[in-house]
Length: 135
Image (tube, rainbow, N blue to C red):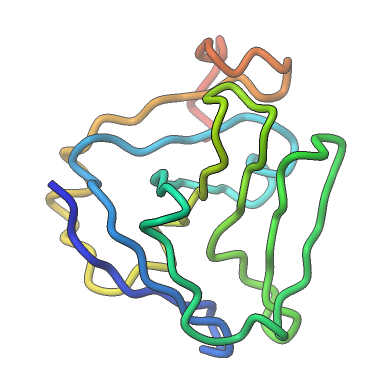
């Protein structure tokens, strides 16, 4: 069931809200940036994601995957969300929202949610990586 969450970077310059269904599942990816950032995310469609404040405070980093926009706060460096454009595995633009940046997440709900592991390191997004303990 969708629930509206607010979220922000560490310093609060960037704030957003999103309608999310955490119980439907979260994801962790083993690509180089997600591994280094320890991104644990929940997916949001563009119509369910709203940037409330801080658009001018965001820096857009794009690594080797040119459809992934890794936005981070230029003040505190926290990455609260990323936007993934097409073409991608789903065929539609979506946001990955960091569960660590959400306010008021019910820890029991988060721990009960299934986690999907993505093998981004090998560009095999539809498969789970062989090793997930470090994610």
